[in-house]
Image 1 (cartoon, rainbow, N blue to C red):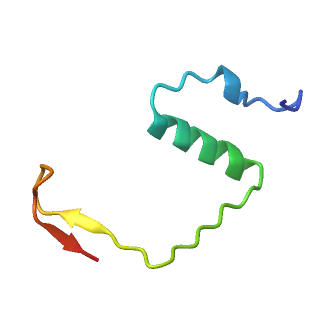
Image 2: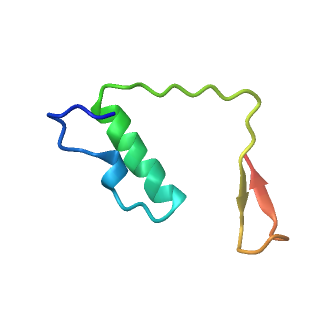
Length: 60
C-alpha cells in the first residue's frame, strides 16, 4: 500500500532483472528512512583472476 501523497509507486516500475529490482528496492526503502544492517560471520570472498569456472581465485 502506498501513501496517496507519495509520487513513487514501486508496483508501477518496470523492473527487468534482479539487479534493477535490488537498486529500486534499496532506493525506495532508504528514501523512507529504512536502515539495512548486515552482519557477516566468517565471510570469505573469492576473486577470480580471469573468467571461467576453473579460474584461479584470490581468497580474501
